[in-house]
Image 1 (cartoon, rainbow, N blue to C red):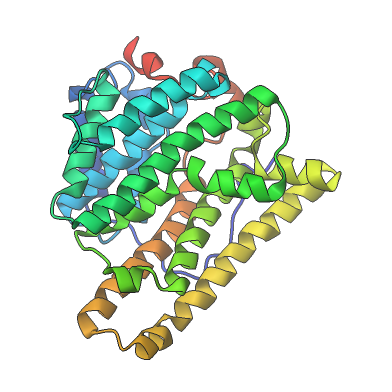
Image 2 (cartoon, helix red, strand yellow):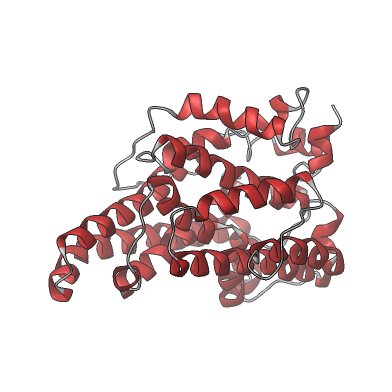
Length: 336
């Protein structure tokens, strides 16, 4: 099984100098927000999500690094709730999804979180929007809406017990991995905002998707053993194996080359950005911000690849499953 899968990433790898201190601050924040307990910090910390943030947001400000940690933590905790019964009950999944989606609408009604996780999300969302334009808030809110909705779609697919076609799976996987929020979080962590003209350059939009594809699909390879143990079908390797009617080894190789190709295309597009900026006659200030953003996307690719080889999240799947099920549910973090 490919839990130790590696990729040759021709992109710079850095780590934020303050990641360790930020990790301590984040664990303290999670405890104060009643998302983990003193007795379960070790279980949550097993996956080292703060180290992931250190790799993937290496140029964040101190405030931005703390917000990035909170965004990743909220998504991790929310995602793992769907390793339980809600992951196979679309009605329950929709109830959870609708509850979070409603919290994105403070101008319509005052958000009223009912759970500690909802309260943490409200705080994180509000702080992320601080200083951002209405345009940024609108596109970031849409990223969250698509993510919350995708949890319902994924639950329905599990209930059906069938394999999606490859194109449908790739569209679903784009949003279930929360990568659209994380690429929005690049601007939160760096405390900048890409102007709409620059953000909507076709090269940039494709690079954003390629970043998400790489992280999500590399994750599929690394988590294959864990997901087979949990009886999952939503995994690139298993989708390819079903669609191609091939062996597991062949499906793994096909998936590996597919993911590898996303990196190659990203690098090609990144190299063309200066010429595209020249053609658009972008002002120097907008170019500088755009380069910060594309550098941040590159950091997600190189940083995630490194972290994936260091975390225990995808190793010892049997041991982790014995303790927590396919992952852990929020109540698992509070009971010990």
